[in-house]
Amino acid sequence: MKTIHSYWAYLVLVILIATVVNALIGLIKNRKFSDKDLRLGLFTLIFSHIQILIGVGWYFSSPYYNALKTNASDVMGDTATRLLAVEHPIMMILAIVFITIGWSKHKKKTEDAGKFKTFVIFYGIGL
Image (cartoon, rainbow, N blue to C red; front, side, top):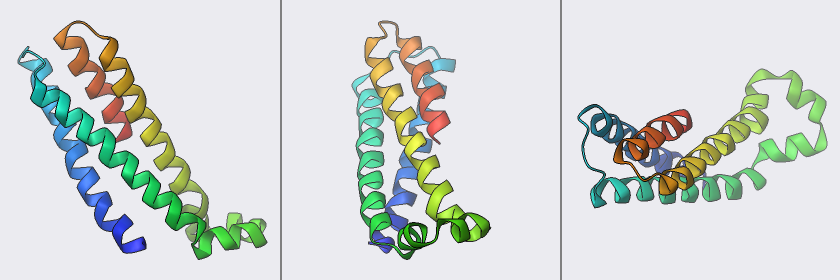
């Protein structure tokens, strides 16, 4: 599962960068928000949620979670273990939260520039 999580992360990263760049270009060129833009944002949302599900599944079966359960003070004292057991999961959850907020907020916008701007801001923070 760790391998799938690692490879899927590259896919999510590529599609997330593509979405942010596309939204930035759309904002700068004052383009109309099209079905292509909508689908790109939606696929980014879906792929990132699949990534977090794979990550959560791997996390709870990982040695880092077991180490955190058995001896949290040692995990917090070791920077490498703390990164994988605490910091990385929290940051990735926050990234997915921002992407999800961006998707929800863009649906409420009526102007094309507002939709692009929402994607640039929230998907960019998630990046």
